[in-house]
Amino acid sequence: MFGCLFEAQSLGIAVPERLSIVGCDNLPIASQITPGLTTVLLPTYELGEHVARALLRWLADDVPPQQECLPIELIVRGTSGPPSA
Image (cartoon, rainbow, N blue to C red; front, side, top):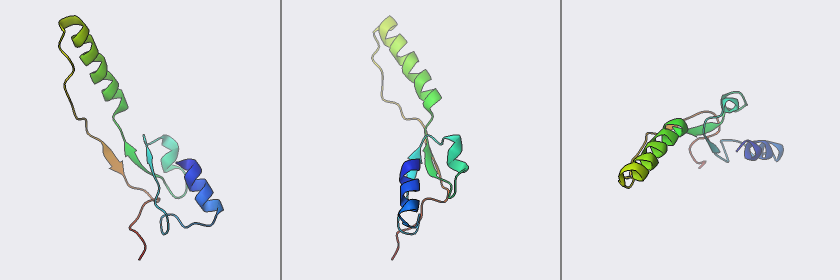
């Protein structure tokens, strides 16, 4: 997503006025660039823990994994906005 932002800036495309950009994983640099990158924060550590536990339970007790939802968070910064009129 950073490449998309930098390319839009080099082409003179106004972000977020003409183009909204949203990244994923909330890397530390996302808040340090200008404009800050709007991002989706995924609970990757917790996801790994849940997958490992489900896999171990499946192997040990023959209980197949169940569907599970983990919370995600949208962190709004300067690269997203409403569509232009």
